[in-house]
Amino acid sequence: MADDLLRYRSQFPILERSTYLISNSLGAMPQAVYEALKGYADIWATRGVRAWEERWWMLAAQVGDEIGALMNAPPGSVSTHQNVTTCQAVVASCFDFSGKRNKVVYCDLNFPSVMYFWEAQQACGARVQMVPTDDGITVPTERLLDAIDDRTLLVPVSHVIFRSAYIQDAKAIIEKRLHSREANFLTVLERSVFLNTLLYRKGISWTRLLSDLEKVMPPNVRVLNIRPYVSGKNQITLDLTVGAESPDAVNPLYTALESSPLFGGLFQPTFQPPTQAEPLYRYRVTVNYAQKL
Ligand SMILES: Cc1ncc(COP(=O)(O)O)c(C=O)c1O
Picture 1 (cartoon, protein in one colour):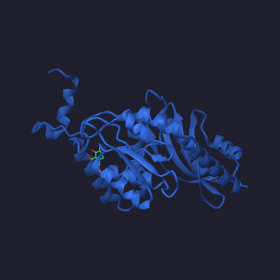
Picture 2: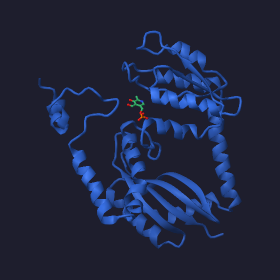
Picture 3: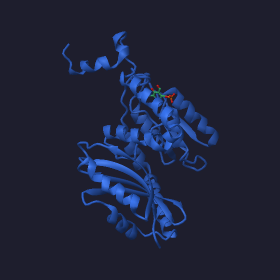
């Protein structure tokens, strides 16, 4: 066989001894993991507790951004966790099941531990509607869509079913979810109004914030995204994503932020290389911002 992908086989030691088909669960370990784990242990051994703030706190976000780049997701939008069930629990913690809109809909081909988790949410008021598969292989999409109504709060589904590799019609599910009610949009709108109200109460002006940022921004660096958090009295923390055409272009920004009396507590920035969708080097910077009133 002259398949170009065969050159990667040697990077997975277990393939020398077995035919390994598990890719949905514990995949074949890449050779590079030996070095990566050693690197992790070395940091622990040499930096001790300082490793958290120097490297590890932001590592989950950094890995999330690297995975996000593979699926064209914007930086800061992919969050990594210990396992799939924990991810579902994190999502569930954002919702309140005590209201009228408390239904959770999925097919019984979802992964078992995930289903156990959602079933347990019934104790918090969730109503679970599990749509049964007919053949143990495919998801009856029409019946799943019919189960999604105005009282549906969540539709936690696997894009690919672990048991059969069946690919769910995620687009149809999302569209049904959006059309069943405009609540999704309302939630987002409510959040941004809430954030602006907080900023307003603190007396922070967006115009001033943008003009202060302009003063520290080098000419060849662009702000791609700003997310402010209110973190103290008259102080906000900015979660900034900036883009630059070359990797060094962003260095003057760090120097300017560090020497400016308005900014402080610059957190170790994370970095993403250019992609086809976003041809700039992207840096995510977290910095405190104390606007003079
Ligand atoms: C598709 C899928 N979903 C969910 C899980 C559950 O993972 P965990 O029990 O680690 O949360 C697995 C585990 O292999 C899986 O393959």
